[in-house]
Each structure stands twice: as C-alpha cells, then as structure tokens.
Length: 164
Image 1 (cartoon, helix red, strand yellow):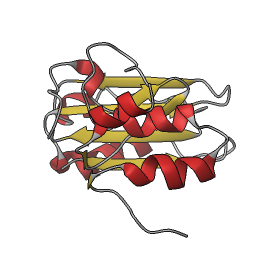
Image 2 (cartoon, helix red, strand yellow):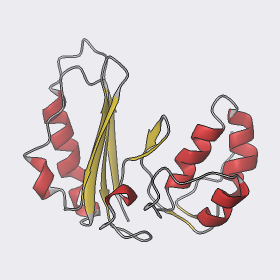
Image 3 (tube, rainbow, N blue to C red):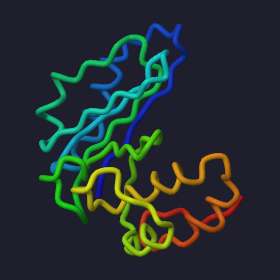
C-alpha cells in the first residue's frame, strides 16, 4: 500500500524541519513508488502542498521545509485506484480547507460522493481517498454526525471501525 509519516513541532522547537522531513520520507520510501508528496503548515496557518509522479528518491534531496513549519505530512503512494499520472489523484489531497493523506481503499466512494452531493475538488480527480477529506470539509464542526452517519458508510480496507 502506501507510506504515511508526519510531525508536529512547537514553533520554538530547534529541530531542523527539512532534516526531519527527509528522515521521515526516507523511512517510508519503500512503501510506494508511484508518487510522493508532502504538505506543511507554517505559523501563518497556510498549508503548502507539493506532490509529484515519481518515487521518493527523486524528492529526497530536493525537499525543503521552512523552519516556521509546525506540522508536516509525507506520503508515498503505491496506487490501487485512480492512476498517479493524474497528479491531483496523488497525496496529500486537498478538498476545500481540509488537507490529508490516507492509506487504504474505499470501494463505494463514487456512490457516497453522489449521496452527499459533493463535487470533486478537481474535475480530473478519481482517487477514492478524496471522499474522506470531502466529508470532513462538508461536516466540519459536526463531528458526531461525520463519525456516525458519513464515515460509518465507507466500505473498503484500511478503515478503522472501532467506536470510542
């Protein structure tokens, strides 16, 4: 499947953000060779997303993360649905204000996009994982509804069905 890693640092942390990002990427590189991407949030809360249709080795020496980045997600993809040649299908995925990464498959994503009246963030996207972030965007602030009614209908693997 895919590889997922990330960090969350206090702004005053002296950990070098680029070194940490490269170490995380190197650690998950073997989990996916079809695409690679990362997203980070700086102290201004703006999220920067970068993704490319290569393996991790082609990004490893070029990844740069500013020292003001407090949060980072890194993803390598071994695709199962939605071809990685269509760059929007690769992770991290942005749907509205929500940015995320996912490891697994969702078999009924098209059905649930239609049932909730949600349009794809980009017309060329067909990746199943987008549904998770689209639902989170649509139901922001209503986490009880999101957890019980929306995500409870997801069908696939890599989904945690446990309830608190």
